[in-house]
Length: 503
Image (tube, rainbow, N blue to C red; front, side, top):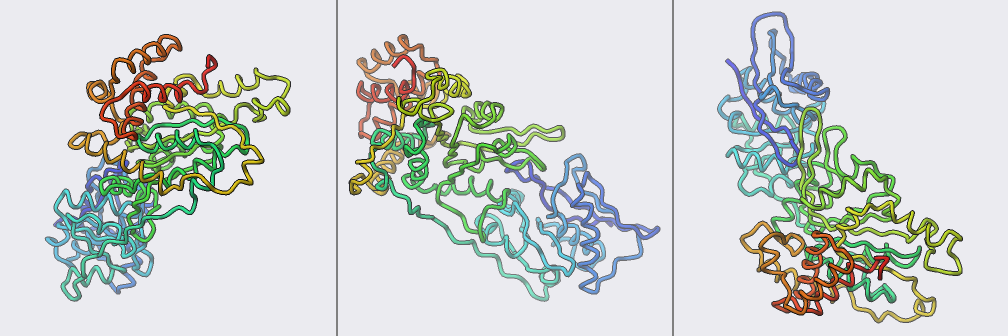
């Protein structure tokens, strides 16, 4: 008789159900695992054998075959240890077959039978709930998986506890969800002296989730401004928190099973590889753009990134998802993030300072900024110059608005968008497209005339035209205006053309 247990294999944030079949047959004693296992899965037989030995359970003197079905789906990771052990115990009639068939299990076994934490407990719980099955996972993963209300989650510490549960000797209590974490940033916009235009642009960007490019000389405050941007964003909604946590679960970034309600802020170094930014590598893991889903991706020294890395951002920015294509699989991750890029105006950084600029002005600036291609530059909704702050201003007392004050306006603007897009797949103004964009963001006659003149004068692309409309709609939301007027369009155009040579 074949015993069956269930686990999952991960394809991006999706967890596909895998049937673990165990059959014992007469013949020379052997233990084989088939069904496209990777090295970690193949080594499970030694860990399972040692764990059962620690429980004084001897393997039968038969040929043991473990099949992971579907056989054409690659199986990666050490979380197959526990389901293999359960299927084997069921085949040996140590635990009931029917109870095993109602569970999804994942967990790595140490040699003494202790269950070691694994990645992906939250997506696995979602899959178990979809299949109406119970989830068994290591104790450390229980608080994370228990956030899925539709699934019953049990989190034993050892294989022995799991065995006693299935035999009825000591039933386990369901796992409790971890804490909700909402981090507060100590960085405040009140610390920033001057840079009022940049603050206004970041407020607009935070309200509508628009992409921002800041250009300024070294020390002008670009990184300082970006670091404070996360402090004015509203907390993640329950849906957004679950989406983001599923990605972070696969990356092993959830701490002690807690669901984080703060929006992600990722700041990779400019030497990061394409796989690190977009995703890929062994197991096609999520990259920085996916880890920043529903949050901020800050890329400092933007032109210093390899050209191939920058160009790969173009498609994810538009579609909100990235497909990591490999020979044996295509893995899809969501990546609706707000891109905040910072750059010096030239290689030395002092293009606009006549006392410090090099002799190659303005060619050095043109060559440096040309590392950002036109199509990628076209995807930035707001482009702002961040000029140096005068030394006399640095000694002035703090008199700017606090992050809490700005966050209140951002939350009010987001609330308007939440009500506007209720029942649709859109969440913020940056998602507007097609007929919805024309219906919601079309300005009045004066505003439309101004936008048409600007489009003809500066040769805006269709993408640029639509992005101006989205930004204007966000500015109108911040003003509490139901319609988009000429002042809103004028301000949006000003941010669009801030770095244009014609201005």
